[in-house]
Image (cartoon, rainbow, N blue to C red; front, side):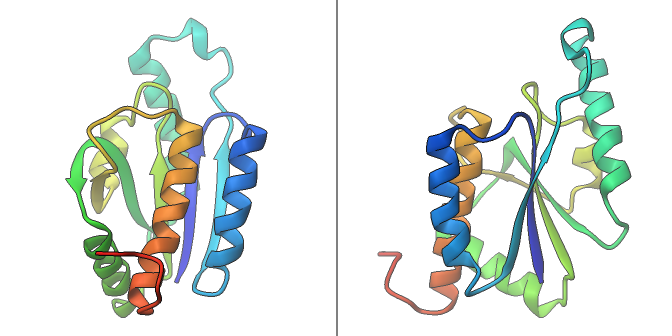
Length: 157
């Protein structure tokens, strides 16, 4: 299975880039993982929130393949423990999912059309985090889940 973390927004700040590099290197032992940054919509400041979200959704829907399994990170999504997340990843692997896309939306969240396309809506926390930090947190959690799957000493219960 290939896992891609898609995020709307700017390049990583140096401290994020360094942290991401650590966990991306560790992840290569378990899974094919990549990060795709989707540039913000041109003239975003002149658009209404609804129009901005709609344009972001169009870009993402055009990039998605019909067989992609989409997980939308959304504050109203399902919360999981690390072990539950590891079980989810193992289930996707067992189901022969070719590509798992994890989507971090833009500054105002994810358009309804994308939420409807998503097979899973997942929340990392009821707190609000900067998008760049979510990329790092999610990448670490992905690594943590794979250490659980492989019964390695990283995650403590």
